[in-house]
Image (cartoon, rainbow, N blue to C red; front, side, top):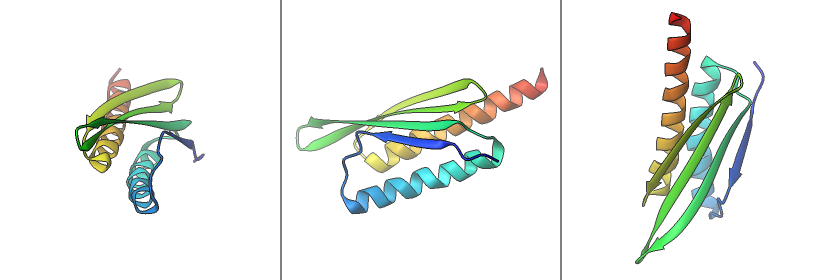
Length: 103
């Protein structure tokens, strides 16, 4: 299996946040690698202040076999936003692989 690349943009985080986000991404990366070779995973974080809290908008792309899967989540919890985007990308990929086998 060839390892794809992971691109992150907008993730200006402290060390603890980076470690947690890194763990979440790595967990999903391994789950995706078990099922398919991917070219890249791209995640983009945009923070916007809402009162005292930050709303985290995470956009994700996963490219496999010239197909790109996209997902976007906005959440006040950065970690659940990242996990949800990765989960959606993985589920979309699995669904596509199942339907392709049935053709």
